[in-house]
Image (cartoon, rainbow, N blue to C red):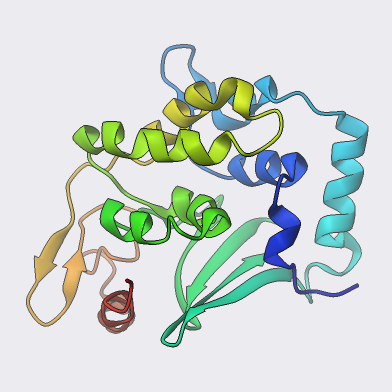
Length: 216
């Protein structure tokens, strides 16, 4: 099986997006539901969904040869998303910037950075769980999420509810801030951009900040 996943495979792919957002940190704060329970509103055939996931990940070979999505967005910027058995890893220009999984590292992109990817619909949704926002930014981001969820079959009937739950998982305890000679950072636990608690990532954050200045 080809290990590279073509970005076009994600178009209108209900199975993929339900699988993918189950890895996010979203939740329903009113009903006290985790995101995987929230996504049960998106009704799919469980047998077909299981078979799709098994074939999509090629589970027999995933540990040594995980599947991945890679794409060049402009002359200076490319990304890779690697699907391991227990986590999903994210890279910009081959520099690691976080993962979704049991030991997640997220809250990397700012709202403005995420919106710069909005012209790439699948990329916008892929990077959404890696974004950090403040409470007052929920109202700005929500209509963008709903717009993209409305393009996914069976999501469109529940897009506002799912968007609200995804947004709950993006809220940071403190905003991003600019640090001299480093660029944008934050003090959020489990964030690569938290160079105070995770100084080992400092050089990578400096490099990533320079890369992200190429966003148009």
